[in-house]
Image (cartoon, rainbow, N blue to C red; front, side, top):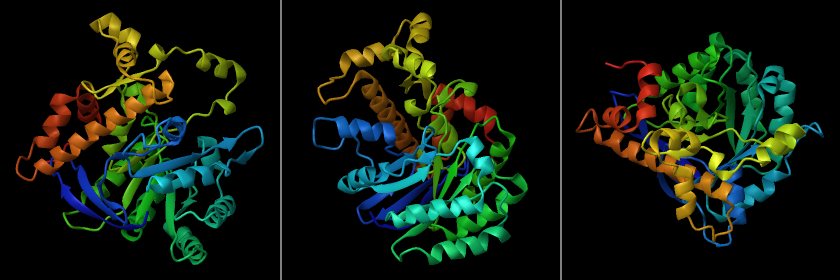
Length: 368
């Protein structure tokens, strides 16, 4: 997929939320997309039907670190990139770093990883930026990195949300003005550095006006279920800060201690959290059944046909993705409607999604 440009379709002054339209070689797409990630890729690969499981133009590969071998699993790229090509998707691969790995990241390591991925033929080549990087330190590294790319390749700076607060705004704003894509690995919303930096991202994004060219902001690595915030969906929580494409943190059983892995494998499908569109968040079905008399996971599994080669667990993951995306599609429409009904998006958030409303009212700045 060739990325041509991204322009602002409409900005809602009441919420600061923006609808962007991206033009590619495969068509035009609005933002607020939850990308096909590693879990959903496996669902598609396992599916018996040859048709795509998900009508989604964006696919993101979280490259795992293999603890036992102390190296990155770059071998996963070719197969996932091939799949994205068949589905005619935007494809982005990046190394899912832990907090410890981000803290220890140096430019020497970042440049090796950048060069490795550039040589693998990626169109969008990630470059992780160490936490203590200033704009002054970054500019010569940036220039040198671009000089190593093929003309068809695009540099994608990757920030960590825990970047030093006093350095983040200047370097991020520079990339906002000069990049087509910016990615941020997002850590806990309880982290002071993360919150400060995410607010800066939101405020810069809010300055865009209809018709402006803008970068696509990719939010990576967040927790799907925001347990500290009434189990609101992580996709919505981070979209509030301006992210256009989202991909939650991936978990690899191979990297977990044996006792933890065994415990996870024993989890029954009904114990998996299911997205509830009435709330805009996730529920443990047993709890919901106790309070409301409804077990949405069991009801879903009784209705869904598992004839496409999916397990019950995969079916739930697939449904969670589709239902969150459908809510985003409606949100985009409500943002567009604010052109003639100014409270449309705000009313949708505050009146139709209970957990969205709680998160919004307690965490977002009031705009006048």
